[in-house]
Image (cartoon, rainbow, N blue to C red):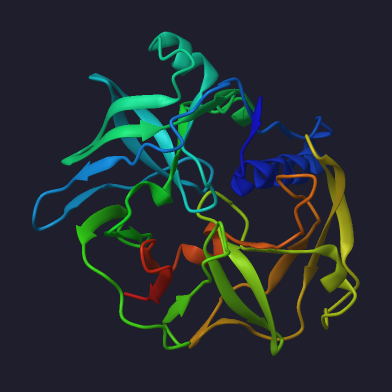
Length: 301
């Protein structure tokens, strides 16, 4: 069994717990493990994209960007396109339907005019984590699957674009860089003047989540209130909500919301709580990821 670093699936349990406050239902549980005992860890996927790039519609499941994919000629299936996932994950049921077995490899994945060949994938019960959703996702497609390409999430335009290129050097205003030692993209966010580095997590529906220590360190309009608990494979974690008395900024941009979720949910037992910047904050932006050069650009249309 292999543990995957998929922070957004942990954040799924946060939103489930918050909804449970109103329904008295059991919070969602995100168990992020793989049945695949083997994987094609050394296999580099090949990506084929038209010379002028390609765009596909950005669909939505609970505030998460979704694309329709075909796998080995079958489908389409809805997959979350996730910057908070180090691995591509296919739902265990779909893995069985497609008879992929334990190879840990998808021979061909197609998104519109985009083709990815020999893509490493792990399997996990993704669909079950979403409960009663009309059309639940059948997998999570890691945004790291397209090295050498610019991946753009155009939230206002509701489209995903992939094209050759590279972002300019970081300027601290619109373009940000993250280190070689970071498994997931990191963005510096200023909260009431204090800089906090968080994961850019397109798979997270919340605006801004921070480790719980910040609920006592940041100026809030009122003390943070516990709203529920998240139960994940790394343990049970309380969830607090609060509103900061000050601006939340990404470079030159101010976020429209000042609400913050505080929790120490982590995808691995030995991980340090990092925090996430998710959909409720990103929905006003066009966000471009350059995974090869480890840069991220924010723009408003």
